[in-house]
Amino acid sequence: MVSFNYPVPQTDPPCSPRETLPTMYDLPSEDPEEPGLPDEFHDWQAQLLSLTFCPPHYPLSQIFYASDLNLYYDVRHPLWYKRPDWFGVVGVPRLYDDVDMRLSYVVWQEGVNPFVVVELLSPGTEREDLGEQVTQGRESAPEQGVGNGQNIQRSTEDKPPRKWQVYEQILHIPYYVVFSRYTNQLRAFKLNGAHYQELEVQDGRVWMSELGLGLGLWQGEFQGINRLWLRWYDAQGNWILTEAERERQRAEQERQRAEQERQRAEQERIQKAQALQQAQQDRQRAKAAQAQLDSLIERLRESGIDPDTFFQDQS
Image 1 (tube, one colour):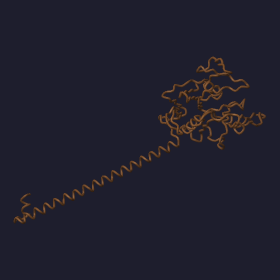
Image 2 (image 1 turned 30 degrees about the vertical axis):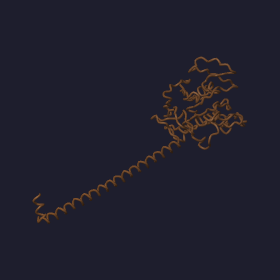
Image 3 (image 1 turned 180 degrees about the vertical axis):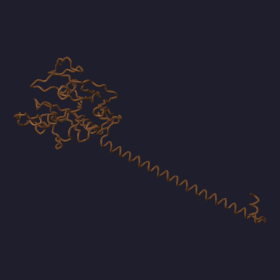
Image 4 (image 1 turned 90 degrees about the vertical axis):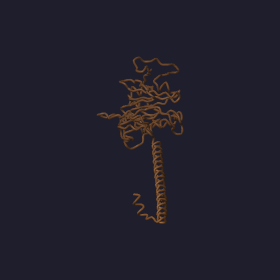
């Protein structure tokens, strides 16, 4: 159970929420009454998103990302939270107050909301993740005037709002992405005014200009599993590599350089051998020519002919 003194008595002038409301130390993500990750895919997919999330306009010290971390969002209800499968924040210190690793993400302490949230759909969470509310097995009536035709269920004082409403209406998160590993369908939504508008996914990719990054579907092997994965790509359309992939790339480049050097050395050896063979052949031809000349001179002398006079007459 969370234990802290709340509310903190106000002063005049009043203190800020950061000073009066619970911190991440009061609101950790660990809860023995909640189950862990729903499946192995959630773990691996979140890791790949984190390893490739490198917004070029921000230093590493101003980038934070997390998976399965409690996101506390409402100063009026400080115990209410959502736990996104993955989210990224830019413009916030990598460490809490530049000192400590986070136990949770408390928006009134951080002062910066997440920029992008990714939810990995499962049969039990798909309706909530996509803003379709189900109450006691019955579809709730849709509200009029809500973007994308989503059925948004308003929160009450004793009931937290659903994820869609928190991300769209409370935190105003610019990008919301959902992916189903069961159908391999990627859907992305961008905040337009007060509501999310679904983006067109072209060739399995979505570009986020504000981040200088795109999110797309990549067919490849990660953690020994070959399938479609979500990962980030850069402005040139290149997939951002993980450190392990960069190391393999460096090793492959080094292997190629070594192979090229071996081939160059082998070519030099062959050229030297050919040059040596050519020199030997030239010496043999010269020796044979000299032997022929000596034989001719000997025959001329035996015939009483002066070789020098003979050769001058021939020239």
